[in-house]
Amino acid sequence: MNFSVQSPHLSLREHIRAYVQLTRLDRPVGIELLLWPTLWAVWLAGQQTSTHHASWSIVLIFICGVVLMRSAGCVINDFADRHVDGQVERTKNRPLASGKISAKSALVLFAVLLLMSAALLIFLPIQTFYWAFGALFLATLYPFMKRWTYLPQFVLGAAFSWAIPMAYVAQGQTPDLLCWLLYVANLSWTVAYDTQYAMTDRPDDLKAGIKSTAILFAKYDLLIIGILQVIFLVLMVIVFCLMHLSVFAFLGLFIALLLFVNQYLRTRDRLPVHTFWAFLNNCWVGRVIWLGVVISLF
Image (cartoon, rainbow, N blue to C red; front, top):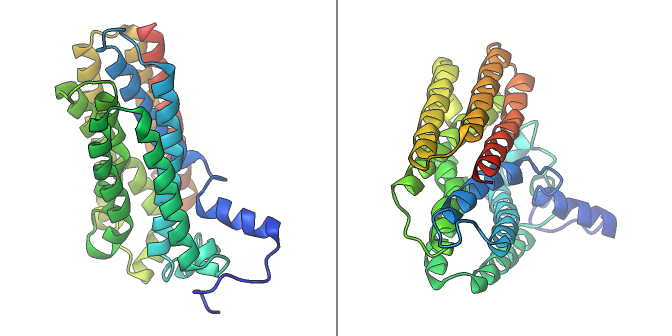
């Protein structure tokens, strides 16, 4: 099959479904994992403004930005992996790998999504525009890192955490110690859950020559995931203490700890179905922490 040409045999409905699959809008877990830390930052940064809360316009802009940039990231990821996704059982039917969408069409869509994201910056301080280049660089770099290093999850963590300093800048602040502690915390958590995700594909990735922390960590994978989760929780505790948040914020972290323990217990056999479940379960980590922050602030 010629992968450079979009299949002419698809109906309009099938074309739409293919583009939905390419942007992963049918799988919102990635949106959630990017959204919740962004909202933590928006709410916490809002506490340091003169009004002591984030405006709803800022919240809406960042939600839209998360959806658009996550979709753009999925498109460029599949473009980079279009020649290897067919060798991985879980990804062999993705639109680019199967030839439903051409590489050229994917790049056009990527550009459109970036332009739509950039349009949101019109409503934010000019400094946010400069910081957005960091998000663009990291989102574009990540998919190609899987060829060069066993640490692509760290690049993904840096990309997924970039909205945190942007949330501070968007509300007229200079990213401070609290901001960067939150950034490192989220980076640690992202590496942990994306390693769980990579464990799901580890046998196929080894055959296809794709590098990941799951391969690098090998038999120490669960131990290192646990260490990263502890680092995440400790840094979040420090942030919450420095901000003098109430017990509800710490209750959210305690529930997150219980979720991490359950993830470890479920993944000790390292079966792909269980590691993928653990990856999905991290949505609840983001939810309970955000809820704890919101209740604490109100």
